[in-house]
Length: 495
Image (cartoon, rainbow, N blue to C red; front, side):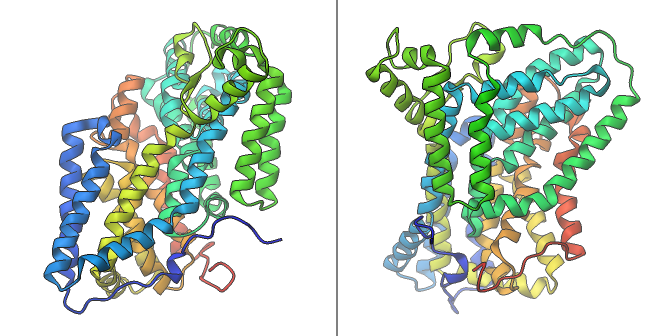
């Protein structure tokens, strides 16, 4: 049976407009203008730039591109038509993003995510504390899809335990962020994991499966490094997690049966079920589990004191659509016990739409074609194209100071170049994640670096060297490209 999902317009089917009136330097004017405006915007707004000003800057970048286009004899109507086609191509990605928010909401109130944390915390052992930090944060970030939430909740608890054990806070923060960004990169609930394939032109689960080739070896090396470090440092005290475990146990009904829901979703993904079907199934199963295992929480969210049809319906619907929270007295758990539902994904949807405006105008004026041709002239090898992508992502993390733009801009710019090299779009989406997503936390003035440094109380330069997963990922993707390991070519099937 064929998938009934909305079929996006793939990059390989997209007509890239050529404009002989436009030269490469004119094509790069909007890019330079966008990077400069983004850098200044993040300087002014800091972390608040993600709330909407970056999206408007993308529109301003589109306006600069439009001026260049008019100067080079492109009509405003042509630009709007291309923008419209670009936005249509993101329909599936936007629907998936909304469904991911819905799934996160029901998985929270059902106790699925808190139960994962409960059992994850119990694997702590002072001897392998740093490796355990990686594993725990990886589990939680995969479950939540958020490195920021992982850092602000369990990350803070692990920093406190490290202080009691006498373990270096720089090492601990590096281990926390290595695990946290594993999930930020690989979880289907992560916005960057959805954003990268949307920009490159592939689907979510193809992207995730292809990322495993570079991500699993990188995480394995990271764990080995932290095991070796852990065996060669002295620790004192004991890892006491009783307070957190007690708070979790008192807030929700912890049960290993809750693991059945993510297990079913994983099986659906492995069986290549269409993403929307798998995510919808996970959302509904999460809601059912909430009614069975957490009736009091559902009733409270639904505005009642006991569970009935009305409070049950309202509680589940609120978890799916708007901000909800599980009541708890533990300050360290309050951040993790909150979910935004579908509304939490609207910022990323907004970003995608504004990026499509910028990319659509760039395409309409012939800038993408000019840049693609210049790239192909500069990089005659497959490795050169991969290296160029990595360098672009790193540069944008340094200049634009935002991981989302480090995915969006190179993703749109390089899609045609990968097609012209006969490379499947998942090569691009994997490289965007390997170099754009994970390196953002290594830059002190990047929104991610500033956020995690402030939350964990550890200076970026102190943990950067220990964030092994984050700085090793770009090298791993270049290693695979250099030796042609799992470099998928564009064929009729994957097109």
